[in-house]
Length: 126
Image (tube, rainbow, N blue to C red):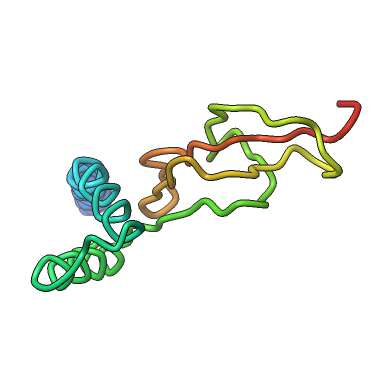
Protein backbone atom coordinates (compact mmCIF):
# COMPACT_ATOMS: atom_id res chain seq x y z
CA UNK A 1 0.00 0.00 0.00
CA UNK A 2 2.84 2.42 0.77
CA UNK A 3 4.48 1.66 -2.57
CA UNK A 4 1.23 2.45 -4.39
CA UNK A 5 0.90 5.72 -2.50
CA UNK A 6 4.52 6.65 -3.24
CA UNK A 7 3.97 5.92 -6.94
CA UNK A 8 0.77 7.97 -6.89
CA UNK A 9 2.59 10.93 -5.31
CA UNK A 10 5.38 10.72 -7.89
CA UNK A 11 2.84 10.63 -10.72
CA UNK A 12 0.94 13.61 -9.29
CA UNK A 13 4.17 15.61 -8.90
CA UNK A 14 5.23 14.73 -12.45
CA UNK A 15 1.79 15.72 -13.79
CA UNK A 16 1.92 18.97 -11.83
CA UNK A 17 5.37 19.79 -13.24
CA UNK A 18 4.18 19.08 -16.80
CA UNK A 19 1.09 21.24 -16.29
CA UNK A 20 3.25 24.07 -14.95
CA UNK A 21 5.66 23.80 -17.90
CA UNK A 22 2.73 23.81 -20.36
CA UNK A 23 1.23 26.90 -18.70
CA UNK A 24 4.54 28.78 -18.81
CA UNK A 25 5.02 27.81 -22.48
CA UNK A 26 1.52 29.05 -23.30
CA UNK A 27 2.13 32.43 -21.66
CA UNK A 28 5.53 32.80 -23.33
CA UNK A 29 3.97 31.93 -26.71
CA UNK A 30 1.51 34.78 -26.27
CA UNK A 31 4.40 37.19 -25.63
CA UNK A 32 6.29 36.35 -28.84
CA UNK A 33 4.49 38.96 -30.96
CA UNK A 34 5.31 41.62 -28.36
CA UNK A 35 8.97 40.55 -28.31
CA UNK A 36 9.03 40.76 -32.13
CA UNK A 37 7.64 44.31 -31.97
CA UNK A 38 10.32 45.25 -29.44
CA UNK A 39 13.04 43.80 -31.70
CA UNK A 40 11.75 45.75 -34.70
CA UNK A 41 11.63 48.97 -32.66
CA UNK A 42 15.23 48.38 -31.50
CA UNK A 43 16.37 47.78 -35.10
CA UNK A 44 14.92 51.13 -36.15
CA UNK A 45 16.18 53.01 -33.09
CA UNK A 46 12.66 53.81 -31.97
CA UNK A 47 13.03 52.35 -28.48
CA UNK A 48 13.93 55.11 -26.01
CA UNK A 49 13.23 56.29 -22.50
CA UNK A 50 10.73 54.41 -20.39
CA UNK A 51 9.79 52.05 -23.20
CA UNK A 52 13.42 50.95 -23.49
CA UNK A 53 13.55 50.18 -19.76
CA UNK A 54 10.33 48.16 -19.98
CA UNK A 55 11.63 46.26 -23.02
CA UNK A 56 14.91 45.44 -21.28
CA UNK A 57 13.08 44.24 -18.20
CA UNK A 58 10.71 42.08 -20.26
CA UNK A 59 13.65 40.52 -22.12
CA UNK A 60 15.42 39.90 -18.82
CA UNK A 61 12.38 38.26 -17.24
CA UNK A 62 11.65 36.00 -20.21
CA UNK A 63 15.32 34.94 -20.35
CA UNK A 64 15.33 34.18 -16.63
CA UNK A 65 12.19 32.06 -17.03
CA UNK A 66 13.94 30.07 -19.75
CA UNK A 67 12.86 31.58 -23.07
CA UNK A 68 15.68 31.26 -25.58
CA UNK A 69 15.82 33.24 -28.81
CA UNK A 70 17.64 31.55 -31.67
CA UNK A 71 18.41 31.84 -35.34
CA UNK A 72 21.54 33.32 -36.85
CA UNK A 73 22.46 33.77 -40.47
CA UNK A 74 24.97 31.18 -41.62
CA UNK A 75 23.84 28.29 -39.46
CA UNK A 76 22.95 24.96 -41.05
CA UNK A 77 19.27 24.62 -41.91
CA UNK A 78 17.50 22.22 -39.53
CA UNK A 79 13.83 21.53 -40.33
CA UNK A 80 13.24 20.70 -36.65
CA UNK A 81 13.89 24.30 -35.61
CA UNK A 82 13.72 26.30 -38.86
CA UNK A 83 10.90 27.04 -41.26
CA UNK A 84 12.06 27.81 -44.80
CA UNK A 85 10.02 30.68 -46.24
CA UNK A 86 12.33 31.51 -49.14
CA UNK A 87 15.04 29.82 -51.18
CA UNK A 88 18.02 31.83 -52.39
CA UNK A 89 20.19 31.03 -55.36
CA UNK A 90 22.56 28.08 -54.84
CA UNK A 91 25.93 29.13 -53.49
CA UNK A 92 29.20 27.66 -52.30
CA UNK A 93 27.82 26.18 -49.07
CA UNK A 94 28.39 22.52 -48.18
CA UNK A 95 24.94 21.98 -46.65
CA UNK A 96 21.60 23.75 -46.77
CA UNK A 97 22.17 26.99 -44.87
CA UNK A 98 19.93 29.65 -43.35
CA UNK A 99 21.36 32.74 -45.05
CA UNK A 100 18.81 35.25 -43.78
CA UNK A 101 16.72 35.22 -40.60
CA UNK A 102 13.29 36.61 -41.45
CA UNK A 103 11.89 36.04 -37.95
CA UNK A 104 13.74 34.71 -34.92
CA UNK A 105 12.73 31.43 -33.38
CA UNK A 106 12.07 30.81 -29.71
CA UNK A 107 12.49 27.79 -27.44
CA UNK A 108 11.36 27.16 -23.91
CA UNK A 109 13.50 24.45 -22.36
CA UNK A 110 13.79 22.03 -25.30
CA UNK A 111 10.36 22.86 -26.74
CA UNK A 112 10.25 24.94 -29.91
CA UNK A 113 7.58 27.59 -29.37
CA UNK A 114 8.11 29.06 -32.82
CA UNK A 115 10.57 27.94 -35.49
CA UNK A 116 12.98 30.50 -36.88
CA UNK A 117 11.65 31.63 -40.24
CA UNK A 118 14.53 31.73 -42.67
CA UNK A 119 15.71 32.11 -46.23
CA UNK A 120 17.69 29.02 -47.24
CA UNK A 121 20.39 28.44 -49.81
CA UNK A 122 21.30 24.97 -51.04
CA UNK A 123 24.71 23.68 -52.12
CA UNK A 124 25.47 24.13 -55.80
CA UNK A 125 24.17 21.15 -57.75
CA UNK A 126 21.78 20.03 -55.00
